Image 1 (cartoon, rainbow, N blue to C red):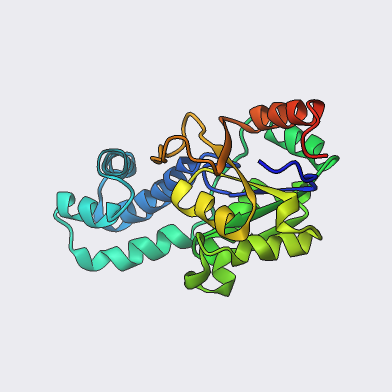
Image 2 (image 1 turned 180 degrees about the vertical axis):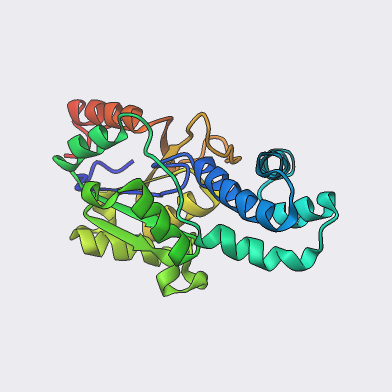
Length: 234
């Protein structure tokens, strides 16, 4: 890892600054309540079906599979997806994260780059009340889906907004395929975030791009403290 001075930290959003499953559960809860109104099914039972499919089969086609299990018409899927994406999420930062971000912001510029549908990601940012903790937020979808990570343009744009070069920033993210490769393309340093409740992506062992692996913002703060103490980033 370069010893060039670190002036900024850029974070991914989902499963980096908060546990993304909170968003899924928030959406499933809202959709279950709406579906219960029109089908007569119990909302709690519907939520259990959505969550079990998600946990057993993954996040793709949850509503398609749920409707098939319930013997409901698949023509309802587009409305359920729209309801899910447009709901106002109930989310929170992990305990202590706000305090850590405030301390880090006294030493570094802080930014966030996130993929996903723009309206959805803005809803997450608002629900988490992230803006007071960050100096720049870039929604990759504003430039179009072709520019989602691993395309590096959103990382470069964030660094521009922070007033730093990409060589002066560290990107912290959870997804090696998207986040790490975006950092590589943008010529940024990369720290992998693997929270206990986050998605367990696979990643290559002994990957030189991964400077460190942390499980929380507190661990990240401790790591940076140690690196500064040892004379790195100067």
